[in-house]
Every structure is written in C-alpha cells, then in structure tokens.
Image 1 (tube, rainbow, N blue to C red):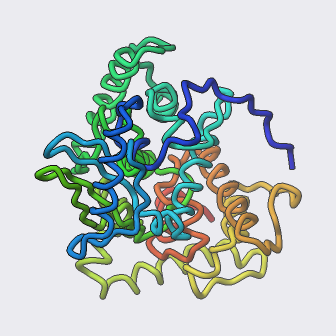
Image 2: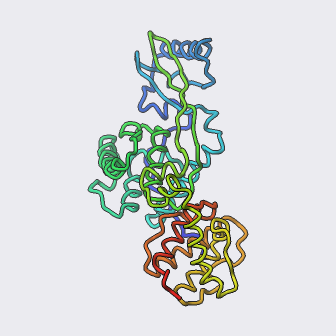
Image 3: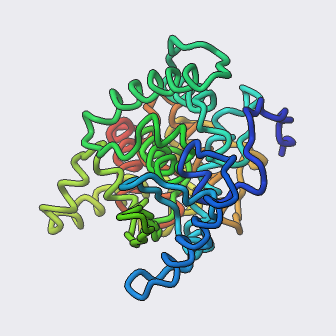
Length: 365
C-alpha cells in the first residue's frame, strides 16, 4: 500500500494562551485586565455559585472568566462529558474526515475550536465537498474580516441544508466564539449531507453547563445536548428511497426482494462455485462484491487489488470501497450506501447496492 501523503502544517491564526480557561474559550472576548478588588469579588461570586445548595456545580470557573454583566450568560461543556469515549470518538472521526477531504490543500486540523473558528478551513472544506468556489477573501486577519467570511460560508451551508429539514444550531458568533457544541452540530450536518465515507458514533450527547448572572450572583444549570442520533435517522433527513418505504410500510415484501436478489447474485457467483444464502452477512467483507463485479463485467480482478481473506474492519472497508470503484467504472452512479454500513451488516445498505447491480445487469448471462 502507498505511504500516506505528506501534509504540511496549516496556517494557524492567533492561538489562545494556555492559561485561558474553559468558559473564556467558549464565551468570546472577555476583559483580561481588572482591578484587584474586582477579581476578589469575582472569586467570591464563583465560590458562592459553586457551593450554592440549589445550584451544585463541579465546574472549575476562573474568576476572570466569570466576569459577566447582569443577565449575561456563558455556556460550556461539562468536563465529565469531555471524557466520554463516544464524545472523543466523534471529535476524532470528524477531524480525520476533514483532514482526508483537505489533504490536497495541504491543510491539517488538530483542534476543531482553534482551527475552524475563523472560517478559513470551513471555506476550503465546503468548496471541496460542494465542488464550488466561494467569493470570499483568502486570508483575513481582522475579526470583522473573519466574521464576514464566516457569514458567507454559513449562508452557503444553510442553502444546502435547510431544504432537507436540518435545524440550524449554529451562527457566526458561536462559531467565531469557538463554541465547540455549535461547531460539532455544523460538522455532523455536513458529514451527513455529503455522505462522509465514515461512520459517526451514534447517540452522542453531552452535558452543557449554562452560567447566568442574576441579581449580581452566578447561577448554573445543566442541560443535555444531543449531537448525534442514529445514522438512519440522520441520513433520513436527506433522502428516502424505495427501500425506506419497503422497510417501513411493507416488511412482508422484504423476503420477496431478498429472494430475487439472491437468485440474481447466485446466477453469477455459481460460476465460481460460490453461493449466497444471507445477503447482509456474506457481502459484508466485500469479497463477493468484488468477484461479482468481475463476473458481471467479464474480467478477472487481480488478487493483489483486494483482500481475499480480510481479517480487519479496515480491510473489509477497503474491499467494499474497491467494489464501489469497479461499479463506477462500469457506468453505475456512486452507491448511496457507505462501505462502512455494508461492513457493519446494515441490510438496507447492502440491498441498495445489490439492487443497483440487479437493475443494470439482470439480463446479463
């Protein structure tokens, strides 16, 4: 296998100091130079808010970051939620996806809040995914310029997502303010819309701490923020097809469809003394898909191009992805299913792939 392409470090905007705390990062620009008395008062406010019996909180709030005006509020992710394995996985999957998309741009993202807030990476990501050029300045250092770029990028995103019923849970100020929750909502929506070739962890939720100042005192509340549901539900916002209808409204006919597809694939696989009885399991490693494409298009697939006995998840995904490439070479559109879904035994995804083959090759002997 070829070595991974060399990626140069991304151009990074101003990074925040290490001693800036959590609320400050999510809360936007806050005053940093205060009189000693103000700091002392704030320390007392923070102590009262944390220790108040009716408002328990485990959040470590720095005095400077809790300098709020009356009725002003800040939000942050509960530190415990940040340690949740599924939350960490979601961030890793999204970062890996962005870096894979932008590898030719010689951009590499390491931290979502720091690398996406100014709109530069988001612009490149959307241009690459949507195959269109946005009319924005390439490099903007000023806050006004960055927000103008973000406005243009987000308007283009909204034009894509709104027709599909997505609730917009982000805006220019929250993205530029490095609000990780807003950034994650945006990226999840983009990943689903553009059918990212990866599987997002399902049912990811986080506890969000909301800090408000009322009558001179800080009050904290906790709310649960849902970042992902099931892949099926999220993808359903974008498209429904005959198989969705079949599964939802005519499950009794599912066996008929499966039987027809099994007959079709065995008609060709029998030539290699192979036989399929379970569609969702026997196509999951991609081997039969690759061999089937060779039989349908009447060519021999060199064994070094795929794993004949795949052992790992990645090897199986490679096989299915390779089969998808062969399908596109044969004139079929890019499959709606994702390789990861087929490998994960998602029956509906497997049926979509096989039905496309059946539609084109049903008369092939």
